[in-house]
Image (cartoon, rainbow, N blue to C red):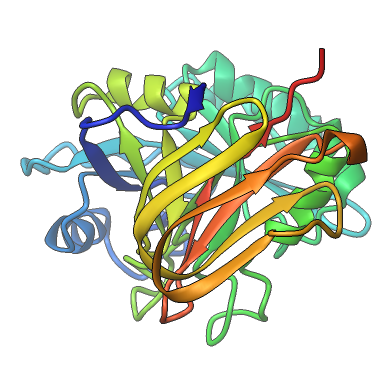
Amino acid sequence: MVTLFEEGKRFYKGNLHMHTTNTDGRLSPQDAVQRYADAGYDFICITDHWKRTTVPDYSGSMLVLPGIEVDYFLASQVIHIVGINVDESILDTVDRKWGPQRGIDAILAAGGLAVLAHPMWSLNTTETICSFKRLTAAEIFNSVSRPPWNGDRADATGLLDMAAANGTVLNTIAVDDAHFYNGDECHSFIRLQADELTPAAVMDALKRGAYYATQGPELIQVSFDGDTVSVDCAPAKRILFHSNRPYAADRCWEGEGITHATYKVRRDWCESFVRVIVEDKNGLRAWANPIVVPYE
């Protein structure tokens, strides 16, 4: 039996993509940190463009990780990579001229984790996504990549399904990518199970995929017994099961306040992964990390 979460273990709330006045954000590092602390977040990562921002004078209980966002321009798309919890060496080892894969590798060499940022906003193709190596996750929802701040390309579920169908199954996070702090902040986040609220524990949980992405709906457990995926959640309106096959029975469960659903994997249809999505009555979603279907 595969279970995504440890029973009884605490979830911490965090945002892993945001900007400050060190680059193109509207709030100072201190004010941005305080905005999330006041909203009840347990941890954040400041990811200014090509800069590593720290807030040494912050003395609150929220964990603040130093990060970076690097970007690269291709003919028909842009590539943005977020580095989580990088050390100072990152500033000497990333350069736009070297391309995105070397950016990923530089983030890892600086002790960080690399995340593909807003792939739908960036118009990334499945071929591009599948070409990257050693990504920790991709952003399945990016709050600022929608009106009134952008066109409507915040949700990358379909694109990441296509990448998974082509062999690149990535864990997923939901983030704000806050710039304006007039509604693009404190909306999309992850709930992460860690042994304690320290950089090392958070990084370990991210590596293990011990979290889920959400805009508010709560997942209790997602499990897989080898044949059937089961979901338990807080009361929801809809529970969805995505895979690499366009149609399958029981892919969509709907009801008033439903808290449980199951989906039997179709190996005869060569299903290779299952992604669970929970939607509440307000249309807000939670996404579990995808389950890879084994074949023996």
